[in-house]
Image (cartoon, rainbow, N blue to C red; front, side):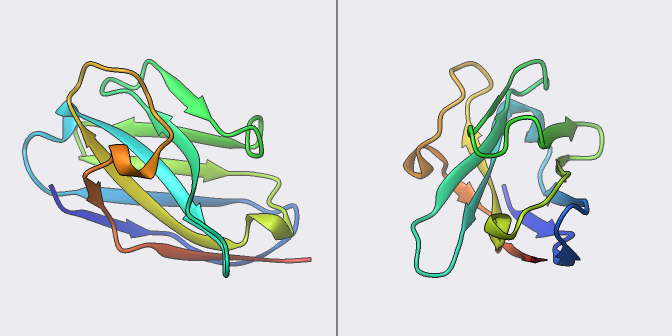
Length: 125
């Protein structure tokens, strides 16, 4: 599967953005999907994950209550709605796909086999 992330940009603190990740291929619904981010000088970190049907989600503590992950399997797209953005949310955001519809939602980047190219989110303070 090939992934294309979009929707990043420059916003002020407190504002919102919605990221999208479009996937190619007809088996999108068989993948668990995740969002990760990487700030300058830092390691890539887990943000959110969603099960193949969207019935289960999991979030990093740092974004819980502010971010929401969702997916539309008919459109082969996963979304990340980001509200109440903070300066520390500034990073390149990556979407990733984990093969296998059945299984736990995981947070380790190494568990995801396919990655998008990243989209930059900059939050001004």
